Length: 121
Image (cartoon, rainbow, N blue to C red; front, top):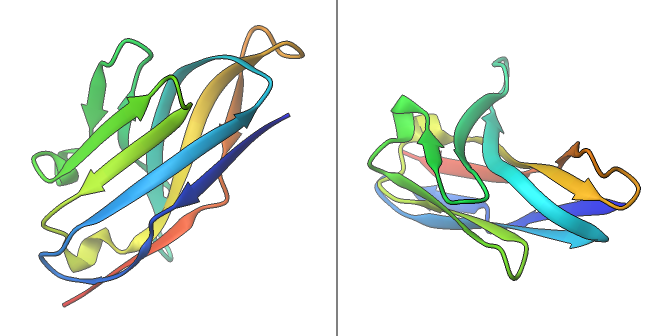
């Protein structure tokens, strides 16, 4: 079984910064793609940023130049540095990972429980 635990959310003023972390635990063989999604009330969950096992990154247009995704493969941990935050960044942020385990060697999608990010104007 794999668990993804997010941390680092909170309340920040517009223009401020936050750093989210997502720690993966369990009998993990390999984490392939991993990324951050967010969902605000009344809206669909959307991709914020993703990163492959070799470090290739992808960002939503709305966060390009402000957010930076990174990963520490040795610690099975994902990060999202969020700068110049805007009120429209307010959402619950979820970690998502495609993980290969001994019980699921072809891979399986896992989600964290989410962490709230609130940006005040």
